[in-house]
Image 1 (cartoon, rainbow, N blue to C red):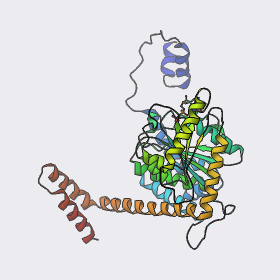
Image 2 (cartoon, helix red, strand yellow):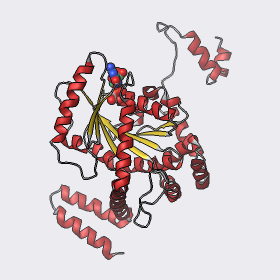
Image 3 (spheres, helix red, strand yellow):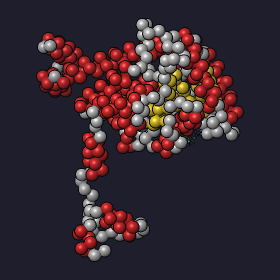
Image 4 (tube, rainbow, N blue to C red):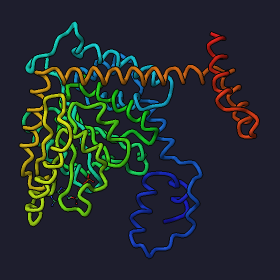
Length: 394
Ligand code: GDP
């Protein structure tokens, strides 16, 4: 490499690829390689790209209704964005998407099973390693082969995209990730569980408007996220393992109680007998719980996400739960209850936002914070005084 070439092509792609070529061996010592730029150029490019990709609201709405996956992804990016301008657009898009959905109110009695057909929202949980992504791949490809359109979302408040979040690694679901009838969206980047839950709920609305009629919401079986997912789905499926030490695998009783179906995965090879034994055990355990008022008796099935044994049976259980609960009205009332929950959460969030966005409040809060730290202010009185001040200044 001569020096003229060096200076001429210092930043060109050609130069970089030549460097790569000549530097295949790990033993090569590069001379004079500069320090990496303090600016994360990759991030800068991504941010610029993001800015470029904003469309008028109507483009998103039309694109979503036309089932355009790229536009759907971009609209979800707006939902996940914390920029005020993005949020404004996102809310308009969501409002438009909601208009097309059947309203399950007393004025609009129970939809029949055939028409208008509500979507299927299914929560899938289980400890890491139980086989959630393998199971989703198996059940998912079965469903798309049956003509369903599947969206797979995830709730994992502990993750962030940069760290490789749950579902972020597309190779986890090789077939589904290239299936034209499936749409996989990684968990929104780390945030409070409430924040992530809201984004996921809104993403469900967009996916349904785009024509996806089965929605899987995956969650890692640790902590509070199961309860959150349970609050946004019609059917809650708990994946478990047979004979994995502690029979309950650290899964709390409350989560077992929430399950509409427990599926014992990895029922293959030497594990099949153990899985059958575990099935009996869990079935007996479930009988100890009070019967559910929705007319559905939770069941325990076995499957192998690897060999696909039992996968169809799991879907049959979901269909049967749907039929029963649609007919006795619990399906509709569960969704209405969930809407009530959304209402309270939105109210809560809206009030907080309104409070903190008022400049004087922000100032007063900071002052009081200091006072509390110094032990000079009673926190209860201070909070009440500020709330009174907020409403008196309306
Ligand atoms: P996740 O962490 O719950 O998403 O679990 P994965 O789907 O990543 O699976 C964890 C491991 O279990 C992987 O090595 C899978 O290949 C394996 N696995 C998943 N399902 C089955 C199954 O049905 N049978 C067997 N033998 N292994 C499985």
